[in-house]
Structure formats: structure tokens, C-alpha cells
Image (cartoon, rainbow, N blue to C red; front, side):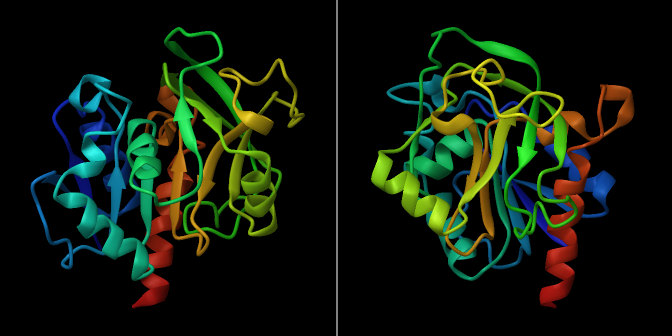
Length: 231
């Protein structure tokens, strides 16, 4: 199962994701943003970093590079695509799901461990979790505040497009547990079909217990199980 790990100018989490995919049992390959065809890959991960220095808006330039159309084709074909942090920003800029990611409510870079609650366990990346399960995952971002208008938010709930919410260690969704001011504590979303998930926390940095948590590894394992089920 070949997984494309996309790399843009300024991507810096590609090798962390590479390691996590390998731990899960996949065959990761680094693929540059200039690639226009991803037909030979079973899925893709868009890693975090600071592509193009977050110039204009985080992810805005990357979302207009040649590889985006190839990623969009993967999404449309039902292949699993995961966008992490800057990868989530890129995915939203490219229109893979609804909403936008903007400056944190407290406009500073935040890097710390948080808890997120699984709201939708029917995606390839959440199939190995229970709905309502609490995961310990780190964040590292300055533009992580998720926002949509109220009508779109309600549409997302109806279509089960809210995948993760920031919570406390007991699973309570509170204002204090919201690190960046995201609307309704939203930490991750998906497209209507659920095969593309975009989240701000870094599951690859929670892929081994020695790191402080291995709660994120099941996202990559779920991705590979989903690919197997499609073959």
C-alpha cells in the first residue's frame, strides 16, 4: 500500500509522517508538489510545516500548486487523504471540505499537548476509535482557529463532517479546553464522503508511547485497513 507524503517548500513534518506510516505498515514515498499524477498511490498524507512561509495565508500558495489537482482526483475517487496542520490549511484552501483556518484567538504560536474527542468514527482515519473516545495529541500552530458561518456549521453537523473536537482529559468540550478559539471547539473535519480528513493536531507526533502518546497511530492504521477493504 503506497502512500504519497506530499512535500512543499517549507514542509517540515514529512519525515515524521513517513515514520508513522511505516510504523502502521504502509509504504510511504515523499512526493514533491510539482507532481501532477498520483494514480500509482493508494492514499496520501499532506504533512504540516510552514509551506511558503505561510505567506498571504497559511496554505494559500500550496493550494495552487500542480499536485493539488492530483490530490483532488484522489479525494473524488474515494482514496484516503489526510491533511495535518499546514496540510489541513492546504486542504481547506483547496476546497476539500468546508470552512477556513485563521489566526488563533490569542494570536501566538501554540505548541502543547491537547485532548481531542472523536465525533465521527466512520472515516478511514477514525474507524479504529470509538465515538466519544478521547485522544492525547499535540498541536503546533499559529493559524489553527477553525471557522465557518452558522448555516454551514449546521450543514456540516447534518452531514457528519465534524470529526474531532478539543476537549479536556475527561472528554468534556469546554471553553478552557479550546486552545485556539475554534468555533464549537472543532479540531478536525472531513469531506461529505468522509475519505478526506483535515485536522490541526499532529497524530504523527503521537505515534509511539516514547513520544508521550501513541493515540495517533491508529489514524494511519485505519487508513491502511480502509485501503485493504477497497482492493
